[in-house]
Image (cartoon, rainbow, N blue to C red; front, side, top):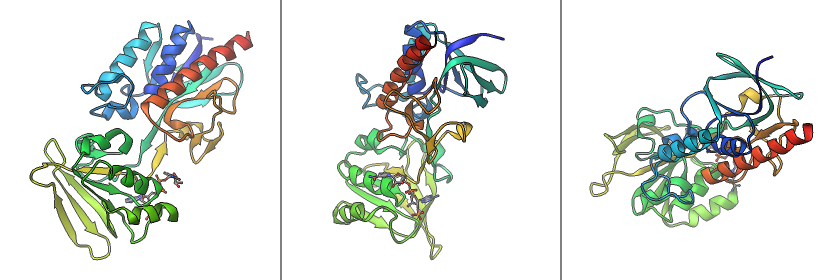
Length: 312
Ligand code: NAP
């Protein structure tokens, strides 16, 4: 049998890298498996204003680069590979990847979650340049600008209300003529004078050279298309998309207890399987932010160390 690590961490976003840092510092032999670039969602975020200690010049990639370097300083091993299957039961857990197989006494699941995109032309290119999936992260960049929110559920309406504290005007674009959000949230929203609604409408295209400058919205009942342009003085506007969130948890289907795809843990990040922990956005939790992901990772690594001590 090959090497058995103390800890294998799946995913190198803030939760996984923080887990790596704490596991490495505790002298646990640790491997982080990441299929692409480090950073997860914040790898695509232009500015990070709300991570403690980050100043205005901080970007998602710059913060992540420091997190990566810090974890590696403590001897954490890295592999770039795509996990295809996991065997989580028993004292030795196996992670089967496209190019190799790895074993460990404990596993920290930190695959994150992905906001559901509109999937229209221009959206991908303009992420962080007008298009956002996180009001808590990006609202402050739209102080006094016009903002559009796509969606009609609890998240869209709550986040739209939050955005009215920053933006000059917020318009919710919803594909039907009534909201899905619960009535209590709707009542508050309809009283908010800075909030407007564009019913029966979907965003078909986002346009801009460097920054979001205009978008094409289609009325689904009449088929009529309208191009909405940024105010000339502003030069840009915001589009916040809240049409659902998808945890990256299909690998663990039927193996770990979940609720709507989010992995359930206790306060120590323990899942229902001994020696298996989950951290970050893949967990069921109330606030999905870099700071909470990093905290989860630290807790999971410390608990993994305790689990190993108790095994021995
Ligand atoms: P959601 O409830 O599934 O709502 C998604 C919204 O996006 C719906 O209005 C849906 O339209 C719309 N939508 C879906 N796909 C779309 C597409 N391709 N193009 C345009 N619009 C699209 O999701 P959520 O608001 O993220 O909430 C997720 C869960 O978290 C829910 O259970 C919610 O109750 C909960 N949550 C609770 C709170 C709270 O209690 N304070 C806050 C946030 C979230 P249709 O209505 O036409 O389907």
